[in-house]
Length: 419
Image (cartoon, rainbow, N blue to C red; front, side, top):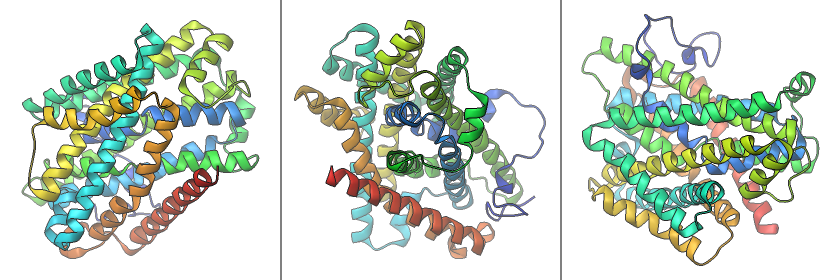
């Protein structure tokens, strides 16, 4: 069935449901969406989900699920853009937008990649400190070096990188799943959490934090670039690739959604009201005290894998941003050093790691419209997408979602400024 948009059929998300296909090796299903999924389980998500569960129990289960559906929708547009055009979003911006605007989008994209790396390196450094007592600065260096090793896989093509990132994602899944099994889930509490509600004003703020992390701008750039490399020459092959990408998106982001939900369920079941502050260190200590050392170990391992994988993905995204917007490229090692420097500086000056994570998320929040609006604009233009252009209702829904996400992030920025 040809795919014209993600809104075809009786349901807006019918196109996201994979068709039955012949069994195939797992490695063939591990694609660009698994790389994108890492951004949805980065260290910032760890802090948000555990704090939400500890503060309000199961109240915000529905928010995590809604955010995951929105993520699938956005990434489906991103994948369709790359496959239908054979271009990444940065490349399309360079080809269709005025040069000054393109340069601005490139500059903010590089800032996004740098802010992303700050969060991931700090998360990895904290995990190494929790696991081995390694000082934060040394942990940041180790995180950067290991991320560079991951990036070196791209020298052999994008497939090895995608497969390794997919395997790392499965390690995170295993760690979080074992936590959930150890803690258990209260059935009635979980069912109550499926009913929309916020509990109190704190719930509104936490819900905005969860939804605000739904769209990661650097992943939109990267995902469109990875799928554009799969653009086949004929329509039949392109339709087949689009169906494969739908499967990829549902599986990968479904896994990421499980991880985020598992974090919240663990905190709701074992840490309700016991966190002294919102730091990752506090979550680790509380898990050790109230659940057991093994649960704390699982948390630290998952956090470490998250930081390492997400740092590699962020640097790879930065490379694609420069290549697409400017048609220029610098060696990945040099880019790794450039993006690592701010994170190490933050750790060297003794800035509170949690505050640094918050600031990096603020930068990402500001940048969301600059990736999301061009994505919607291009996918709604028949001159760009051809037969795969969005239907009107898809564009309307996407515009409403973009407006909602932007409004949420403006609200969070206002709350941060007033605090």
